[in-house]
Length: 170
Image 1 (cartoon, helix red, strand yellow):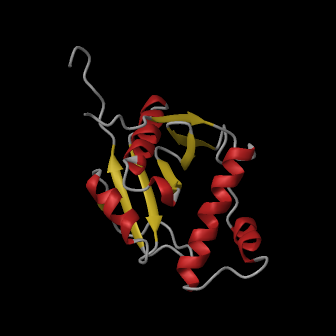
Image 2 (image 1 turned 135 degrees about the vertical axis):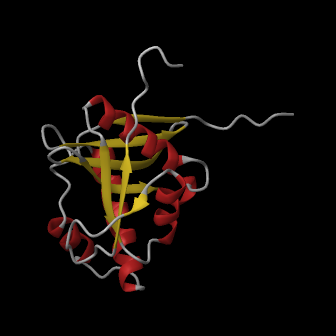
């Protein structure tokens, strides 16, 4: 007997949409908890969301992709357009859906959208403690590069050169 796994479906959405707002809050809660190694204190997540807003993850400055695993809202990833490249932000898969290919689905979705926008490379910065994220990026062709940003939480920097299918190639 074969088990049918739910499909991953992605869509672009505004950061102020209720589904996006929920995922971004869960993302930031996890970032606060992991950084401080304790439960988030009252107001701490709101402060972090204000310090690092996601409202520019909408045209013309960027985009936000949400993923559903089957019918479940399961994750998000954003891109911020830069001059000649895009910056990957807010990659998050809800804990109940981790290990089922959601990170790969989100990376593929943002990479497709970046290529469609004519972008040739994606960069990102991340923290040292986010070892799962760093492993995900490495598995999907992102390589460590010298620092391109100097934010307080930037400890590792990655880049992926996007390739384009040649016309007529299959």
